[in-house]
Length: 308
Image 1 (cartoon, rainbow, N blue to C red):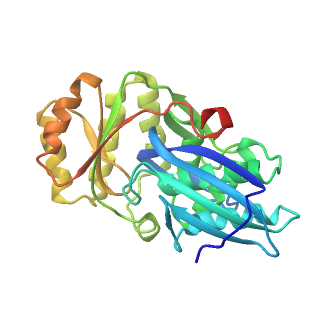
Image 2 (cartoon, rainbow, N blue to C red):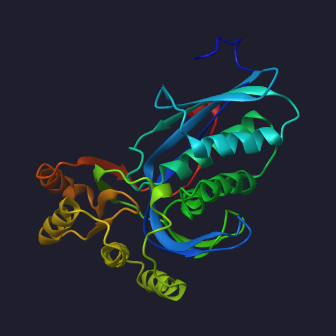
């Protein structure tokens, strides 16, 4: 039941890109801030925008909506809210609205996007004065604790084609980022896979092999190498259904390199603007939703009033 409240005493809004992981290897650590993954992936401009409203209240409480629908299952957002409210001297009712531009559960890092944009917005609304990396560390902790991701927040923090060379949260993990311009990401969404039920059972590659794959792409700076190595990795995991495999076969026959988003029954490719018409024609042959997005090179950020 939605509470009737006086006007909010503070409002803030932030954005985080979505992120498609191409390949990764897990790095376990007793410190949650150092636990994460090596790997590479690309951020897209279709992400999650989160608005936070704060109301004075006799005790801490919250309401979370996703695309206007109240959610009881947003475990990552709940974790983030509780972590931030612990840092406040006042008690609040927090109203959160996540606006997701891509579907949830299709391997586009929406739980990380929600956590990161929420962290930025709450830090600003509560006037806690945390740095961007300190705010992002809370989002990283939420993903690790809830088992919804390993390195997504670190990659979304930076944007671009991000290489996670040292695992951990922003401010701890180390990355290199290639900014990719004049390209579009075409994403074919077949069906969802929810990471927290899947991440512990998935096949793995060694940290050494993962690092070699990253170094190979960083040497050539070729997006095709990223797609090809991601494709090899996705094939080794053997989690894709026949529809995804058939689509990738047709894309290859049409001259496009592609791979699968981790984790979802989702195929993606990176193309030029003048190739989009061919991509749209191919998509009509399959029961998948097609999303076209720019590459997000700037990463997560607070949205100021003049940007709204």
